[in-house]
Length: 119
Image 1 (cartoon, helix red, strand yellow):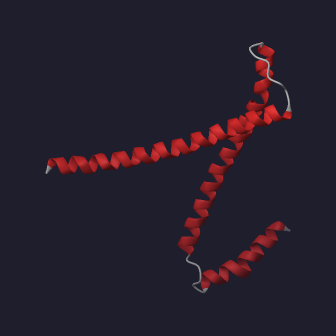
Image 2: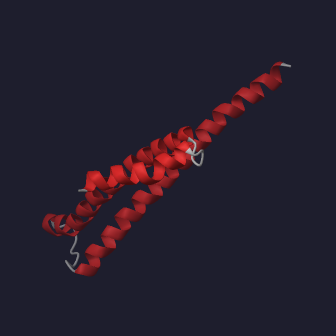
């Protein structure tokens, strides 16, 4: 049922738009590839967030069991550690993206400065 509705949608909407010149097939392909890559990245982030949440929920239990400190095992304390863990992960993702961007920018600027100094 789902496959027939997908092929019917393609035959009824997308194919005539491509044939009529309304959609550029190369652009449609590029957008599709970008969507697949983005979906893969988001899925990886969601899996990491689930793992971080599980570790954050276990943290008060581990600390109490080790005898290092006494953290109350409540919904509020577990929620606090989950939010802290996911917030730290998102800060890491943003910092990593900024670092990669500046590294690429730095590499390009070194080439420009090197060419300028040679003249």
